[in-house]
Length: 529
Image (cartoon, rainbow, N blue to C red; front, side):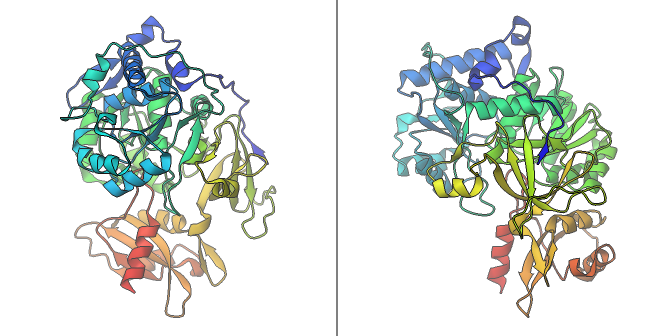
């Protein structure tokens, strides 16, 4: 077993609301919590707390109580913080919904989570109304924050004058949020995270992630995703930093906001790192205010990370996590420069890890040439979920009797105390008995100057044997050929790892958090056969 190099931190036995807002000093109350780049409007911490209380009171007056499940379908706007924390203030449960979902997908989540309220914004109202009606949620329980006829809106709720009631919940067992797992390897499941899970993970992250009250964070990764929820929203609020919200990613808008609002800290997913490293338009903006870029949600190869950091003169960091871990279990320590950025850093405080041989089930502990052999990463800590909603069998498959979460990710442990993620257990390609990690080939190909983006999956050849196939987004006018791609890989890897098929595509399908949707590529491949 491998334990965190840090001593345990104390986890306050409080709700998320009390953890973030109960000790708000007059000095902190005057700080800027949220900035809307569309209007330039600023919300102080004092104003945010007052809005959270007012929203909680208004919901309580309308019948929302402890345990009520509220769907939240909303992009990154300042009101998200008010609504999200207002719901938690009441002891109700938030199920955050992907803003890109169709009405059918929204309906499925609302029904599965047993939500009886839905909150959204007018640009998403069409699909929200359809889903709400199909889920039995009446119009007076479908709140449209910026206003729509026939529905409550944020302004009227905040000015209703209702006072939130005192509540009593057990932070360790009460479900605060119900995000849904990404579904990249199966049907999305509701992940039950308690107040203690969320509080613990922010406390753990504060040790490794050097975010300060003087920082301005560009919040482009969605708050509805657990990465954005914990590491952007809650960690930034706990540290009394300022959040500049972005409803969706657009590279020019992203760079403009950094320049205009002098953002200092960026939380990103790998596709943004690729853009920072390679896109020519980056040079047209002054983003020198940025001192740190932290990447998560999917593996980022070291070469791209180093290229991005060197280009914008910023410190590049990387971490690892998943919804079931609230989400962070590993992060690069900001005070150590001996850990390669290709790794995910060290285990957070209060965290223990195991590596398990995927073939034998044996625990891996021995180091050879400075690192262990690869194994499935198991994690234990106060941030591990309570379980999957109404899915005891799936919970038992993922969470064992000793409290270890089986991540499904393959990792190695290095003698410097840090970990590297090799790949997903289910995404490993087996070629003639050899295991091939798609992430390794993707990292290699991203180093090719004519490759803008890439994804690798296993496909069957004429002999029904699994081989690596690369889907490549080539740079415009590059004249790159499939043979060029295959030759480049062959020159850098063992023969069994060679890419044996190449297809050029306009874009790599990815989730809102930046994960490659390999299932979409597999479906495309199946349809083509």
